[in-house]
Length: 440
Image 1: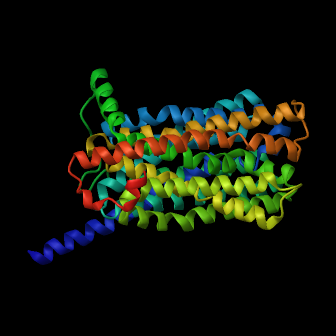
Image 2: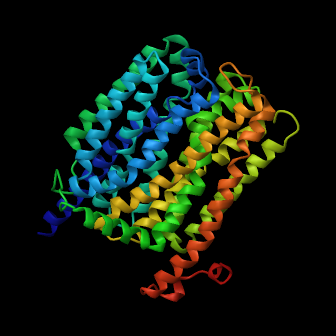
Image 3: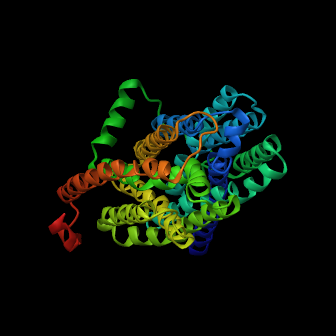
């Protein structure tokens, strides 16, 4: 009997890693599609004859849809299971990216990016739910971080290779080949994924409007959910806006780098993100009371790195830009801390909806910054298609980030006090609190 139990346990562990790898592959594809415009911004302005504000609308629309979909997707996952929602999202992404490849007008391209945002929104929450269903609680923080950071390899695949494909194959073939990745990911998910060990498809109870309101209200009332929301809001947006849209134009037109050098720096940013993720996962698992402190440290480091670059007389040296992108990359795994705060603050039955609430935060912030940067660039450069975006214009535009860092850091300080008080009230031993609490 003992041997049989051991064999079953070993099989479950192997199955967990296989399920995770397939879920991770679908997230990789989603990040690829999400980031595929990052190195195509200048090409898109020529193809569609648009201004910086119109270019920003692509990413603005994508982020707006992504953020708006987070709570509905969380509720869908709680109701229909991760597998069904993940498959649906992957297929939507594939069709949308194919439409973007064929688009010849600005309106058609906008419609395609809208559906890219919808499909993208239906991936990450599903994979996190699979992680929580298949892995032991002690492993969840590290596997969650690995999911977030390894999935960002999709951003690397949309940097140097997409730069090459756009210059060599042209717009339609580059994005058409990118769309084909979704078919492979969908097939693997269809064959391999199970919502939990022994259950291919897990259905939750049907939710009435009043039940949905009660579930979302309960999640939001948890101070840990709100703290997770503001951690995600504050840490993520600088890395997101840099990777999705404005990093490449900033490096090429604002800092005078070659397209290949800019692509390599975007790749380096993702490598920094990947290297930092497992370390942060280990830290959050070992020191749960220090999670908000780690998040604030990351925000401070990003703000300082940007200050050095923006205050540099003239164009910053390459070494300084290397440091900038490596520090910005910390924001990706830093934002995953928010999900761990939500996980430890909510019961499994509403975990996906709480995750959706948290996950929309960083994308609301990113959306705000993307739009503001486009507007400020047009304001400082005269606007219109073909405008010359000077280093001075980029300094003004990128400085808008300080507004959101200040807001987010204030809210993190506010809700970490409330979160710790709530945890102590519900039985967490006071001796687990670090000395940090006395000054928080």
